[in-house]
Image 1 (cartoon, helix red, strand yellow):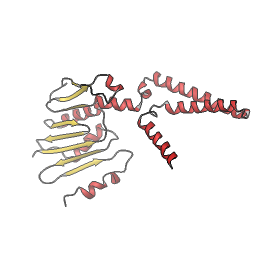
Image 2 (image 1 turned 45 degrees about the horizontal axis):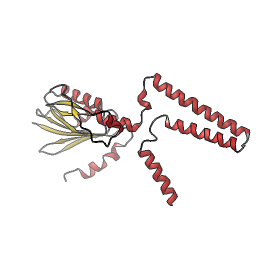
Image 3 (image 1 turned 45 degrees about the vertical axis):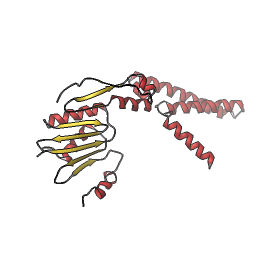
Image 4 (image 1 turned 90 degrees about the vertical axis):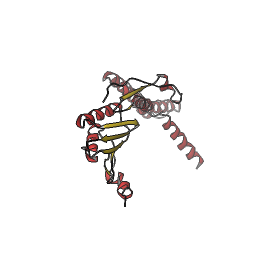
Length: 104
Length: 132
């Protein structure tokens, strides 16, 4: 089943973007990606192998010390996975999502 | 208080303009203040020990400044001498964009864009490096 993701980060460098693209396409051949907005990636996995947590962890290896937020968008329900940077508390940073991002 | 508001506004403006932007700037301030203090103390005939103390501060500031400058050049880290404003502009310009059809494209801009970021210069997109 096809899966779609949105990955958002804080400011990254060109080298980090290149590394992320290389790792993503190497680990998951066949994924489609779009990166024409600063710090935003749209990723489509036709084979449904990716998960939000997997994507987050892969991005974490490339964007070291950066805040990340990976959303999985699908028909059954959206999920997300995130990581905070060294200077921020994850609980505090993502409290808003825990509180307001639920469907119900 | 109007005076404090004006001061805060000036500090904010100076920060926004990146005048406090390189690693050498605090050292330059330290050196400048020490020299100023030394000159004032000499002019107003302050105690000798105060003049000596300020002279030591000024000398330390100068040595530290030069050492930091030489260190950055010798260790091949001249980027540390560039302003944060410049580095941020460079970062924004060097960013690549694209998708899995085109690959990551790099946008190149004329070098004068760095000196005038508000100038509306044309951009050129180079050929994609790879196709996915």
